[in-house]
Image (cartoon, rainbow, N blue to C red):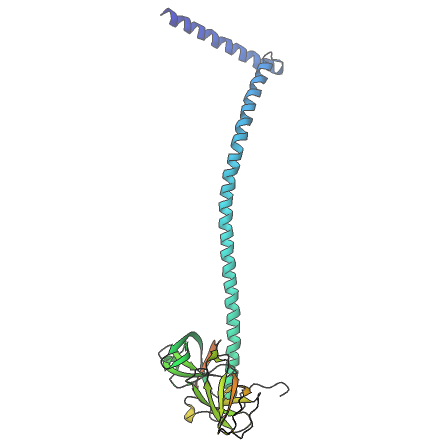
Length: 292
């Protein structure tokens, strides 16, 4: 009991002394006799604050850097995605422009030849029973396409339709070894037969029926035409003779021609749904340099 009263008395005296010291320090301001003690305390706690700040600042900067790095990576990925889309759009625009130009050329070719075409695009390269070199196009019976119709592009003869569904058709190319078509030398009536030899359509074989007729490299060949224009209409450019074989004593002459149509890189094509009323002869052949 006595200890408790003494402790309370001591605590009260200490509190009173503290209040007196605070009052004197506050009223005397900078001239306070307690200034040195207050400065030492400030220095002590300021140093501690600097130490804590020095420790925590790198941690904060690291956390901020990580956050910024993640955000920057996301931004980079977004920009890369945008660039990829832009490149795709540019490529598509260039492709559409090229196809539009090819389509205009194809229409011009059909107008010069006097035949009507249904235009389409090659969507796949595929085989067909009995044939090795064929493609699938995106037009069919709903568009008026039927088997045994001539297929052309802006440059020349491509092949013929062998199968047609509602929306697609299979075209056997002129380069197929089992493919054949009647052909005629430009500027005359000498006729022969074109056969495919494979090799991705780089060359086709031309067998001239008259072994006495002149046959030289650079001579151009057009389709002779079939009866009622089935499967081939007349006057479609086929190719240019590049080499002539020596065939002494033979009844026919053999040459190899480079097709006008790029049979290994087909895109826009036209199916001839109406044959010309008259043979266009050489009117569809490309104009040679120096000709008008």
